[in-house]
Amino acid sequence: MTKNQTHPISPDKSGFPSILVILMGSLGDVARGICLVSHIKNHLPDSRVSWLIEARRIDMVRFHPQLDNIIVFDRSKGAAGIWDLYRTLRREHFDIALDLQRIFKSGFFSLLSGARRRIGFHRRNAKELNWLFNNEHTPYYRENRSKLAHYLKFTEYLSLPDPASLEFGFNDLDVKQTAPPAVVKIQNKFIAVVMGSSWESKDWHFEGYCNLVEHILKSLNRSAVLLGGNSQKPLAAKLIKKINSQRIIDLTGNSLLEMTAVLKTAAAAVGPDSGPGHLAAAVGTPYVTLFGPTPADRHAPYECEHLIVQSDLNCIPCYKKQCPDRHKQCMQNISVDDVAEKISTALGNSRGGQGQG
Image (cartoon, rainbow, N blue to C red; front, side, top):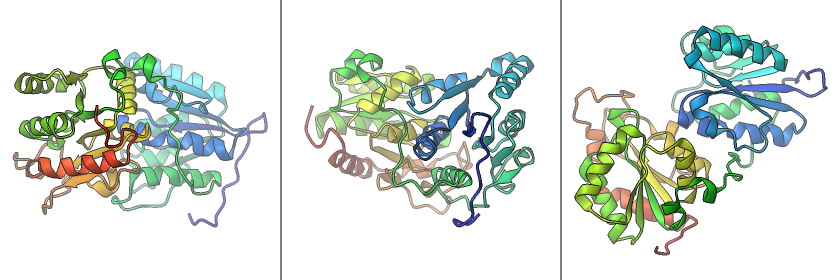
């Protein structure tokens, strides 16, 4: 589709279009895609925008002030959950479905929505025969294009212009009510450290994390707040045992809502290419990304493209969840000095500035 082409919007019975956005699972994907809500509502204020999501990610979208409706798919109910979803979708009488997830399940749910216009990815970009369920498709794009940029291509099918800036909808999140008290006391004076990701190949080495936290405590004179899922708790405990400082706060395993509040409160954050990085960018916190098996040009968090650390190896990117050679050289080669330099750059542009805490 060229910029000169337009796609008329068919309204529902109320005279305004009812739009369904389908993006359910990945934390990083939802954190990036949620900006479509503001872009749509700013140009089509009378439209009704609904978001289809899984229950475990609902905190990613429920604070958006412009989102009209949230539809939750309960996968634990199996076939009964799909039947419940079908009835819910049909009651909404959607005009347009935007299938941002590009897998079989999302395509099937797009079809179940009953929307006359079902917009999805080009068949060469879609996965698992997803393209069969949608009747309009975005142009083919090379995989080195940022995922966020391609999400925004969907809004051209609503005849919307390119956005001058992006809004992710977290302004109404009350940090004092949601962040742990220990973090509220030191807000804007700490660095959030994401201790790992869902891919083993993306994880930095233990000594790197230890040296980085010591740099944060001593050279930057700031506290360090450790974030991650339950699988990162043993690594965080090991780090705390080795460094033994009261200025390290372990919040690995906390809820998604608490993680969001912590990231919103941090002066800066650092970690591997992962969902929390995109969440940090969505709440306006600069995130230093340690890239290994994935390409930075496609996955760098919004407005953090200048805060990238990546080794120069011929095998990058491999897109493997586990290193084929088992040595993870791409992550091993990332030095603490390079990461520390990027953190200083991030602090120079952050809310916390270079002040100490």
